[in-house]
Length: 273
Image 1: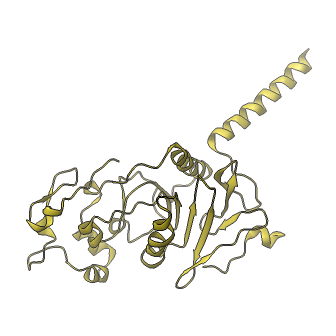
Image 2: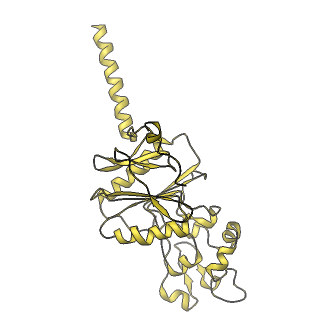
Image 3: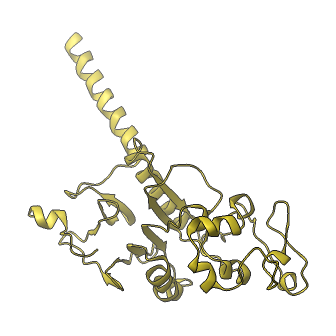
């Protein structure tokens, strides 16, 4: 994955749905998913169980077989905690809105923002909720989802993940999540960015592990997945075109259009006088 050249160098170059208490599994009572409940007998080890009880067995199934056995999206809503501050919310909104605007003619992708990603039975049992701050899945349909459920998405994992890191989450983002995205998700690209310190780092998956992505002389990091650069502008993480031009947000685009119309109107008025 890491052999493609940086184009600039080459040219010059929910709501809380899934809740389960510690006693719910042991006593065979009911799991609460925030929707009509499921009995835990579905996952307990007995000969009549419809769900297999080891992750090894689950991984031996096809995505469709897993989808038939596991809870569906109506039972698995996102259950992510709130973000640290408005600084993080604004950064996340900028990443989502800018890419959605840039790709407004496309229908073959999905953007997840602070959305729980469900990928295994073990994760459900242990309630190991994993919600990347920002992720993109390509070659899918642009349909709103309450969560991303891998076994209902033909086994698809994110193609790129961006974590908005902080002092409180730095160790998890740099170690635990990086290992998960590298070894389990096999996500081609992983970035983290701190809205507070402006630290930005990127990694691209080779045949086995993540290799660091080097920035160019302008401090921009090339994303093969997005076909864009990622870099810092006015203390925010922004997208840049392959030739290094800043990708405008929807608001910036509207203001530019208004300014152009206003300028043309002034010229017209001047000629009429």
